[in-house]
Image (cartoon, rainbow, N blue to C red; front, side):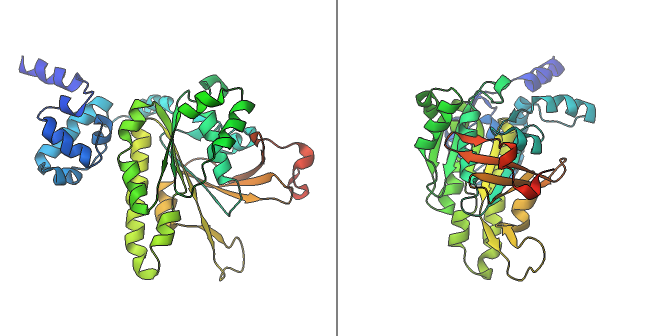
Length: 335
């Protein structure tokens, strides 16, 4: 009987924190104050993160293990992992060329980073994704909502209306599925993401956007002596983001600013902010830049876990992100 009870416990699915063995209302409230509002967020936590809630390491490990049993996280064979990867979905950017560069669109459970100079189209891509994610899967969407962390006051409802109308969606309905949170400082930005799990779960969110990732960190941490604490915070912030993306099978997108390196005489002197921390955590990095052809933009896949480097062109119009015609492609890029 004891063995049967143990098997039944392993199969049990926990919906709320208070469903977990040994978690009462007071403990659950302390965990919520730390940003763990759902069983999914607890499943991807580290034991030491629960110390502030007065939970010992042994008890914390038991709770995390119970939460993880709900998500069926365990050691698996590669062939089983391949089957699990079939749950990964892809989100269209609105441009067939850009989708092709990304292997069919943006992947869920990963972070895709778009970086470039001002006006290169980073926020425009984010706006388009806010609309496209609400399309049905057969049209490249995920039929779900969006969480948009706005750090530079770039979110514009007018653009959402234009883009929604272009793909045949009702703008008012589209707006209801976009949750916008404006971050005023780097700490506020981290706080919003750390306390977003309930919002994500209750609103069927499958796309998390941070536009931009490094703006506040860049302005608040000045001088080489602040580089270490800045990088530590960015590291923690991005790992929280990837945890949420994996727990909720969501696509995570961050935009990033760039800086120029005057000591670079050959090659590209423009580099993204955040250094190796951001580079290692972003599974896909795309460099966006303007072309000489007005609305045409050039996207270069700089790094990916499995995709080859390459370039594609697209354009930003009143309707949103679109493919370019042959005569709009810069001459030097034509085959």
